[in-house]
Image 1: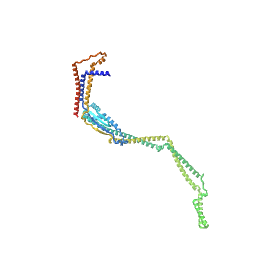
Image 2: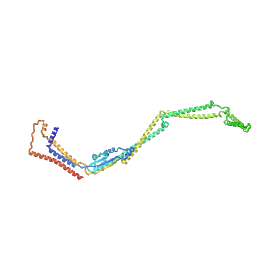
Image 3: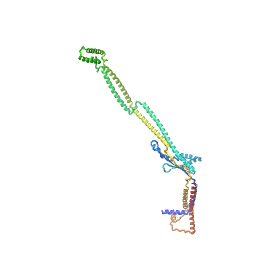
Image 4: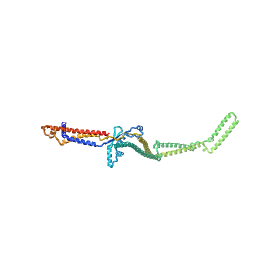
Length: 508
């Protein structure tokens, strides 16, 4: 550490030997820098602040009904894309900056220069943005900022409408496509039902259930047919004489109506005979009537003997029952034949019907999927329509211009006081560097330690220099001149700063 300090002091002493080089270099750098700063053109900055209000009472009211985009993310994206080349070209046209542009190269340079000068800053608060632009002419700066503000506001509204329209067009196209799919699925389902009408599965029943039901119905019909045929055969046996009991002569002569009258007359005759004799007219008349009825009964019996079987009431009843049994058996045979036909068709289609049911299920599934998607698209279109109307008309995202752009009166750049001060500091540093470089090009040994270290030869002693009065006076004059030159440099800096102050006050 001691060696470093010693070496530093040695460099400082060497530079001090060439202090006039440092003073001259400092004056040259300072004066040149101040002239350059003074000749720098003024640049005026126009700015505007805009606040984007994304809070709306409709957002909670329309929650679940309309699609609500991420407005904050959208605003950030708009601010980042504002400096795109198409937007900057629009700004050039709107601000009339392309009047003096002659070639494509000039236009390209102008656009690149504007992109580098335009500033879009977030002020640190939510959705509060500052648009700024610097130019030599304050009117141009204002026009550019106004154009940027217009593009920022109108572009957002146009993007919202464009997004809503593109979403609607896309959904409408999808609805038309699914509508055609739905119509095709309905037609396919209709044609399939028409082609397989006899093998279509019933409501909640499949092929195997239908086959089991048909088999059960066929068994019941066959049982009923056997019962009807057995009853018919029994009637046929009775009519054939095996079980038919023929009526005897007494039964052949029976007439229920005449027998009833005879029986009633006989009861009446018994009553009369209890009270009267056989010659009483009523008794005589009753006997005569009974004799007539007996004669009539005998005559009818003689008549029935000619055709005892055909005139048998039991046989007639059996014939009627046989006819009914034949009709019932025929009906049962027809039913059995129908159920056998159905069962045979089902058995013949045992391989085809499961495939028909599978195809029918697939068609139904496709139809339901298309129908569900179609209904969802209709609901989505309504939601998109509501979202577009909300974005366009309800003011869900409002732009509030906090500070409109105006023509600046005072230039914002360059900051001449700061630059002048930096030039002064640079000139002082430059003078020191020049003195150090000169001392390195013209090296001298200012102390014995430096000489010993440089030569490596043992140092036996040193001879002190004794200044004369004239040399001391000259040295004092030299120091005074150095101080005056340095103070003159700082005085010149003060004069320059005063001039800048009065100039700024006069412009304001």
